[in-house]
Image (tube, rainbow, N blue to C red; front, side, top):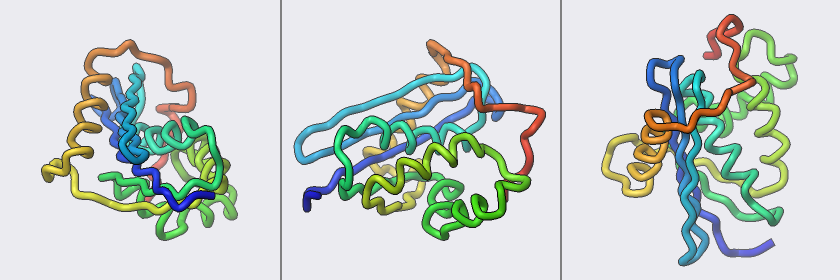
Length: 159
């Protein structure tokens, strides 16, 4: 483990919700910086918000990093900070959305020391604004992948 912090900003977007979607990620490790984005042909905003966090964690090559994740998604931040996701897991995910992504997240979460931070969207926070541009540009311009976990007919209200 290191005392050095990985700073991660994430954002997700869906045009139409459901509709074409994308996510944006900015990773900062000291003076190093990496931007990531990807687009999907049919998905939701919440899926893209969560997917951004997952992909950021999947990108890492080391374990037990001290990671600070900044997101403007209350859905993602509250589910983790308020420990709802582990309650959903214990109850067998009954009537929950995005189960495939939450299961993926849980496997990654335990590999690191993660602190979640909610930031207000469109409030001039530079890295959050960059993530928003990455996500919306991806959603608009593609190339679009299929979000195999999204099932419109099973789109049950989460919270």
